[in-house]
Image (cartoon, rainbow, N blue to C red; front, side, top):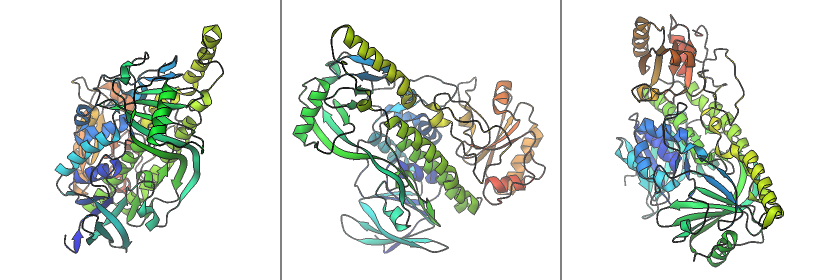
Length: 547
């Protein structure tokens, strides 16, 4: 290794967030170096839901089908969540199509969600990142320290096999290095909020034939409501590999492998000869960094926000961080973005983080521990009545955790400094009822064309100008030429479908590289420099660009 190497962006941490950022940069031919302490991806069996929005990003990158092919159970495996007294006991309630994993075309989104272990997702992301020119992945390397000035960042990294230290000179550094982030410490950011909402365990085990030892049918999770061990569990991968997660575990309870196997047997009521593969304690907390940036150094993912993993938001929210930050850094390095674009990263993402964290904490407030009731495992009419009552409670209290599409795709960047507010209604978001809107700041409403392709498939790597309904072809040609003259990458798409024009509520709509609406209007501005300067962060004053 040379004493000093040069790249444009140094990314610390090669989980899904770091890999997504490398792909976002590499797709735009921005050189980056991604380093990771572990010698490979996929150590921890953490997230298992790759949600609708993350899979839409995979579609943009051309690898959504790769992830589908990596599914351990196949696309048609039902994503049902069963609430039971025990895996070997009685049913309380079932929530079908949790997280919207069911295949099929839905007008609201381009890709359905997918139940798949995080390490399988990481493998797909890693393979794609390695194919991109300018992306370098280095495993078994850690960041020791970094310093910056107004022009650059200098970081010292160490090869964990050889001990050799190297200096990396870069334009920007991004910490995607998780809850114990060195990068966060290096910029003096602090995590604020509430630590220790609950103590829990994540146990991975192998149990041959377990799927056929109960009567509840296939599913992705089985929530067990009993006094012995409130918990949830589910199939995780091929080879009869399952996860078991006891929640609200008292401080007095510990889990050696032998104890863990006994706990699983007791909680399920099934003695299946459990082989424990891993057992990790984790603490549910509600924390958010007091800042996400110090000049040329940024934080993304768990490095700047942590919340209980109920709702499947965490990893997916980190990928969205990487997408938001990635195209903005690329714009700066390619010369068509301004400093306000980088300022907008925290301005846009922090309100989303707070909104999603509130949802996750609300979901965490009702676990199997809180659903316990007398008589749930009794025979006869009294037991039936107890189970029916808890079933009603589950269908009321837990549906939001598994069917909150609006939390996944309905959030908006209403207060962004690089969005042009058109004065339309900023209606509140109902987590259970997604309402598509082309209000600036929102994710562009999805649309399936008659030929079976997604409207998103026509969007470019840069900005996209939609000309809808009565939009003038000559005006669209002029907009394309004006953007080119200003150095702003712009793809122009014309769609005449009147239903699509009604959905977007304007004939001209400017879409950002991350598929969020930047501006819409009844006409393209006569002087577009102000508009394009504002949405690219080069001009913070949106005067005269309402359209």
